[in-house]
Length: 305
Image 1 (cartoon, rainbow, N blue to C red):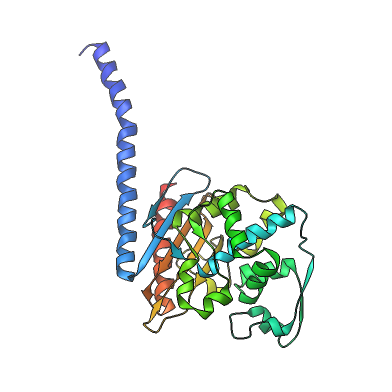
Image 2 (cartoon, helix red, strand yellow; image 1 turned 135 degrees about the horizontal axis):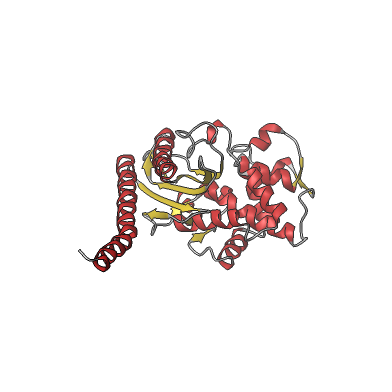
């Protein structure tokens, strides 16, 4: 074998290495997706999964063409819209708002009303956002939508103008509670939820101070809110927003969701979105399905990097 021929073989081998590595990586990601699809098939209902690497390349979407009911996930984009008004100088986080007790729904999910029972409330904008996002308070949410943000349509328009098209916000929490079918009108696709998380991570829509505030109120919820991180190491960092419907007469949950950004062991960041619709409760079934999907994703990217 001549020197030239040996050199050619060596060069060809070098050229083939990236192709072999790509094929191997492609096979492993497909295997991950198959494991996730198995969890989806076992859980039943409609489940969309989105994964996006925030500060490195990678990601995928499963069942991404369906619009999944958001429920309280829609409190995350609400915060975006309101904090933009803060950045414009139209609002201040310290600004106080009066909420007469007669206007507060005592039958809905409202930690705020439980903390301050049977009284008129004077709440700062920062506190209202914290209750709405961190504690998923429905009274705080609907006050912010109707009295501060300009209504669901205004928030929907803001999101579309920001480039997040596959999302629809039409009704408040109070309106959805009155009619089951309205929950399905507030929807988003997995890709849109990943867009929102990327905009938060990249600080594309808000000033640094407003973006930092939003991240702060989206940090890991109390134990009742654990879904993505349930099967992950206890110290896993997560910023996220959950959402859940009630259970219908037929025993179906219209929605059970969690979208968020986890910090991997090497310090890199990964967005995970799991949107579930029309599956049989109880909610523990949904919690375990989201946690199992997140664990598969976590294990894959933790080993890969």
